[in-house]
Length: 478
Image (spheres, rainbow, N blue to C red):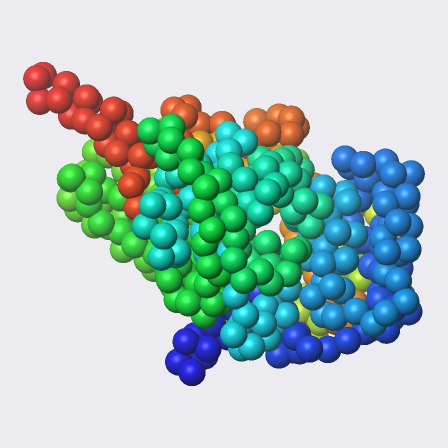
């Protein structure tokens, strides 16, 4: 029972579905599902900043009609309904327009002793690698390349999952698949399987075929030790180099922003007292969040005023106004919120934020800054890395981010009236500080692959040994 409670708490924290978290067995009439699909599509057209940014209205309409027809005559489970809504929202391929994984159904399945595929996967350069193996077959190891599963090439399986994952690029879709996890999505799309036939290739190039048993959801969740994204905040010295892992730029606590700022203040007070010359800021596996968090961090090593965008516009709508009034029932906190409520539905306005000022010289870190990123650096984490790169505040090390720093974002959500599925939608368009509108992630100054996203830290080791250590040696010689 302890594991069940842990899974329920974990799932509710990760998958914000509210009441749906306990409704895995609910059924919906086809007419209700179709009505909510119509409501979702109509609302997306009104509330999304640019629903047709990457697909034409004609193609979106056609795909929508095909999904409506696929509903059929039988009642639909919560899982089936959620998956349909995922596909509907993902037609547009905008990363911040999405429906999350079906948490309620997953929790119900777990409590019924449901089972999963026992290999956690990482996706790199079009290949799938075993990130963690939870099978008793000891010949299947982390680092092995998965070639086929139940007779299907892994690329065909990835293509089968991509329609449910809303993202601008295949690279980002695969990053999201890593985030939600391959075993969970394999179950959601293909259902429960008692065992799996796999073909793998090990590091020496030897190919082998195995039949491996499924693992229970509870055992899987207990074994994997949490999600890819990391919420903890930490500061320490690694081989004499200051290392700051700020965690996400958000917090569920009412005083979360104050706690974050106090943590950052304390870290930089220590850094300056120790007279450190090098600082590593780790933005890998970071969910992003709000610029009030990231701005405070960056101000400690910025050498000139800065802003996290060159252009930021917001589209207001009836559903956004309702969301905003619910969020602020008594007072309007700022001009930004006032514009959302006062501009006519469907119009856009420019968000004017003053430049953020650096910390005073007595507090500011004036040494060399290295910022680590990977494909799991999301939203404001990717935007912050772009800011640091564009202003020249630090050197970016790692792999290209899945999320892009020029993006449709400023996400909010609305709930479908009959099924209660939550739909997330971007109300804004953000252009990175240097004005580049190309659809690309943040490309590091030094590219280092974060293979498997495991404990063997290629990116940190490269930064310490190839970038910082030579400079330390040079300083000693001088």
